[in-house]
Each structure stands twice: as structure tokens, then as C-alpha cells.
Length: 268
Image (tube, rainbow, N blue to C red; front, top):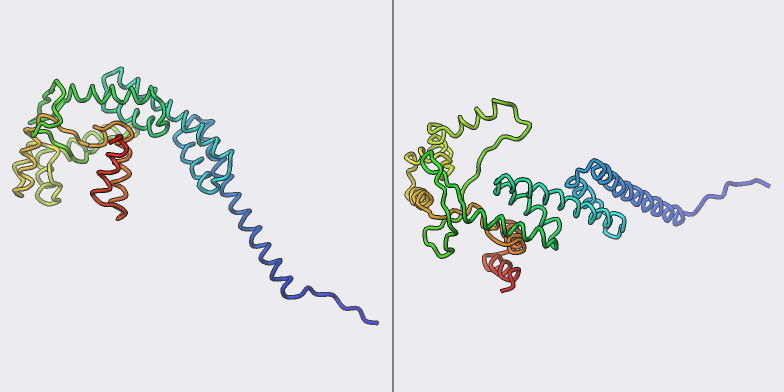
């Protein structure tokens, strides 16, 4: 009697293959989630709470049902919010209100329900409205007093800028900024790169476009200048405005959607 090796049928092999593929995908998926979670834990232990928020957010996106990841994300958001809030208080105490505003806004985005952060935001915006330093013709003019929102000379919008990071090479970075802000270079940027309004008012003589000339004149004579509209609004309308504009640029909205978004977030 001859013995033969029993072979599984084709359907059985196919079923086992599908099972192995599924198990493999689950293993990869679980590894990716745990990798992001461990990265978040390392960042949290180093008190880099912003990085922890990024890593935990990635873990939650990979597995929205992971309670540990969701809890860790909430914890990191609260700690990051507190970190930015205290940074804002230190900056405000030294009258660096523009930088303080940025810190408070980040704190509010991370923890929108914190009443203390919201109060700090309102106070800082008020301080910025009542004492605005405007650079004109190489000198600084301090405008005191809140301007009426109906003042026809008020201007919304400004321009991009350049800055040195804390790790930038010195004095090379400062020298580069002085070079790029020089009148001659600014004139070249206006005429050759079409940057619009120059950062250096002395270069405005190089403007040839009638529309840009009118914009420069309005900017130079404005009683109040708000560079970013969302910073002139409370937190919720400001965030709603940012999101609506992002959707607009992505082709997912229109002008009416932006207006409705801000109005609804303001309770109007």
C-alpha cells in the first residue's frame, strides 16, 4: 500500500493566503500606530509638547478608536496650551505684545475652552489696538487710541517679511537683512520681481503701477493698519476665517461661505 502526502485544496490555500495578508496588514498598521505613539511619549517626556501633539495626532488618525492615543493627545494639547500661555505672559510682561499674541493664539487653538487664555487674547488685542507702532520714512510713529472700525483710512493687509531665527549665524543673517532691506535692493524687487509694496518706504519711488501706487499711498496715510484680519477678531471667528479661506483656496468654498462661517462663529 503506497502512502501519499495529503495536499490542501486550492480554495483552502487561497483562504489561508487572504488570512495571512490581512494579518500582515494589521501588523504593519499596528506598528505604524505604536511608532507614532512612542514618538509622542518621547516628545512628552522631553517636554516638547508641540511635537507630542503632532505625533499623538498622527497616531489617532491611524487608529481613531485607540483610547490611549486619544487620551495622550488631549493631555499633550493641554500641556502645550499651558506652555504657550505662560510664554505669552512672559512676552506681554516685557511689552512684546505682537509675539505674546501669537503665543496666546496657539494656546487658544490647543485649548479653546480655557477662559484665562481667551481673556489674555482680548487684553493683548486691546493693547495692540491702543498702541500701534508704524514705521514711516525711517522713523517710528506711535499711534495712541483705538481707531474706529468705520475709519475710511484704516487698512487691512501688509506683506511678507524676513527674520533671523535664534540659531542663525551672526552677524551674517543681520547683514543679509540689512542688504535685502536696502533702498537699492528694494527698488530692484519692485521693478524686477513685482513684489508689490516694498518693505522700505524709500523704495516706493520705483513703483510704476497706478494701482500699487494708490495702495502705497493709502498704506502710508492710514490711521490704522491690521496686517492679518484673523488677528483682529476673537479666537472662534478668527479660526473660522482661517479655515474658510483655506477651503476657498482649495476650491471647496466661495465668498459667501467665508462670510457665513465668520458670522455663524460670532453668533450672528
